[in-house]
Image (tube, rainbow, N blue to C red):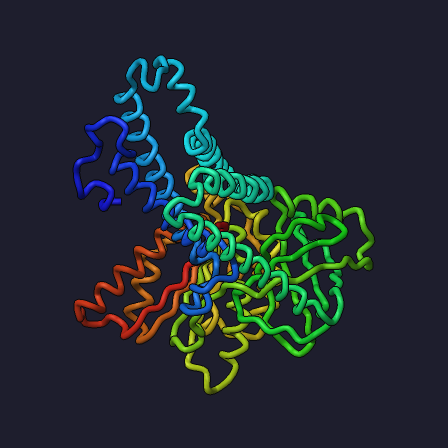
Length: 459
């Protein structure tokens, strides 16, 4: 971005010379940036293979580069217009100013640039977080179609000048190659036959899917699959975290809480079916998950907000299973789940109880915080709950910073994982950063190591 401004002059002073140097630099930088935007947009990409980071962790680079590309496009456009208006003179090539304006407008590089810019603006507006989170399926189709439109106008605009199409064909190859690899991997994953999923309706409209895989599938705790429900929405896929650890029975369990979009339609579809009916499901994955085994830390803290428990749950299962072994380093596990109301707990509470069954409270401690009642209800007026709530819910917001600080001072090594709304992740990151700062400064009593994995609700 800075490079576009470092070398004046920004405009040419002579008539009929060339485009503004400022516009040219911005345009070339935008062109060079374009392939990298698509590198970070694909689920199969070279960065993932080299660095090991999953596609959802690279989305931040995709967005930052995209915003930079938009700014460079405007820097490219505005000097073009300024210089064109400044240089308009009557009777140029026997044309009036009006005639010359229309002649200029219908040049390929001009009209395609305008069309490109409008398509780019539409692409950005349709990608705003509010739209992306609440209308994910619509966003996905709009995003792909808009990206194709922008690329098509980009081809026309560049007109193969100074080797520009090499960058654009590289972009097409990157995205096409990534999509092709993903398709081939999906065929390979389902090569033994299309898996079928049985379902169970849980409390509060939640759904428990059991997918019987035709071949041995292996995944790490916290990873997710993209599922294609062929009889419900055959041309759509949605990411779901795997809610069980990989085992020899080749069964993949997914816990789905109905919200909107595909989860709502799936829940409505299954509610009208008999519980012994199975549905065909295509598997695409696994992707994501923590890169560290949390069981190598003495103390592990798992923070969940709302539906973020679906990511935390398989981590808890894996830790509980490993902590039963004498060789396991992990000695204690603390789960903190924050929800808006008690109704948000019922769909998951039985699964949590099964996961920690037989474990002493000195090893596994589960806290459920009901935050919707804070400031509006008197906790003393709440009826007592059965011990299935691991001692009863707490009607207060979790003191994330205090919990992490206290645990850090009591253990030599600590692993932290969190999934939930941005406010929760913000608090967890800051608290872990404070502890790591204390470690870096050599403060007494601080642990030797603290590891953090933060997982977002959506991308």
